[in-house]
Image 1: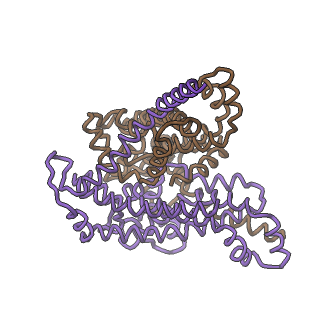
Image 2 (image 1 turned 90 degrees about the horizontal axis):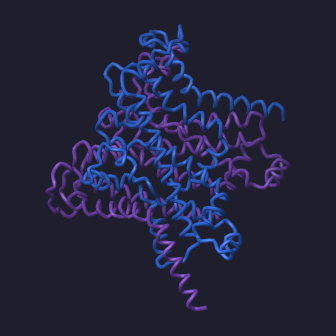
Image 3 (image 1 turned 45 degrees about the vertical axis):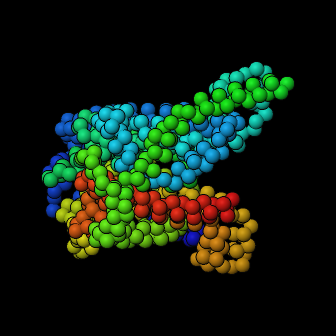
Length: 271
Length: 294
């Protein structure tokens, strides 16, 4: 029995080391001098720890601006998706109105549409609106989504109606019921949806890639991908940039591991 | 009384419409309209650079199916999917089973396997490009220590796709793992215990007890992974740009190139619809599977 456990630990440790190796390589490379990476013998550790890669990443291109753009865009999208998702989900779950089932079916079908299938018309539309190279162009198509409405509807349906009925008899309006009774009880679902939406928006790549031409409007992912195009790659700088682009999400993940995993399982239906 | 109910009903409709409106507007403008408009565009010879377009019927679809690069993109996407899905799902099932045996450090292991899932595809693709760099990268450096001279992973047409597959397996392992961990929790303890009492070895237990009990989660993970694989883009864009010599040209990269580098919006819309149809069928299959399980 003991031997068996030991083997399991050993296998898991080896696999975990393989999984973490790219991260270790990224961090260690980011601390090397620009030309130190070009040594004939590969070495793990930098001979002298330097932050010059970080300095170059932040000064040679508007990397900080990319980061702020990403933060702003992902923040707006997350807030908007929470609001529109809650409102639409509540309407689907609790309110009677003509056409409810048809519209909901439309939402369900729409979840099967891959984003690439709509990207060309969406691009043409944004261009017609004159929103190329703007925050509005980056965020507008994602201010609401069928998935957010679907997820919140499922959550509301799992809640007992009795509390809401009591409040309505006491004279509360529907919106008061939603904001005072339903929302305080929905924190776990809101956290899952928020986390998932933020992560998706932060890591999104194809849309900002096609909608942005001006350098200072680029998001982190697009800015990163263009560094790669350099003919003489400055690897320590690119690794430093990658560290800065991944660190916020990794730190958040370490702080709230359970919620992250929960939200991925919960939202796994989407893909 | 009746009048009052009617009034209430109307008010509910009003509230509902107001609540639904923001979501519905975005939905109609950026999902419903685009999906039909892209179908419409796919029957035209259209360019993103000029407003002129001519109706060509099914010509885009016919050209598409005969185009060698598109054919290459389809076979490569299938190659990629066959590389990522079976190995990725099997490996993550193995890790989940090992992790499920009541270990200390479980949350450390789980975090280690899950971390790649949440990091951005662009960032990890850059890191892997550097790892796979032929002269100074980590992989060939490690291989050199044991006397093997590694290939130019991303520049050799034979190795480029396997490299991308390796990255993708690493990136998605944790996602399937948490699905399987959740599924394993649902297997009754008695089943496992009685298997142990019958003296089966761990391998037999995995094949004859765990896998059959996990049919639902495995089916789900397989279909989700296939759908994701068909949409592969970020790692291709960053690591290979579809090359060398189209060795990693996949469907979505082809679509991106046709639409946003060559501006052929009509032709690219046909690509989009072919992709959409394939994914739609797979998703229906997935829903069928899910329904069977719940």
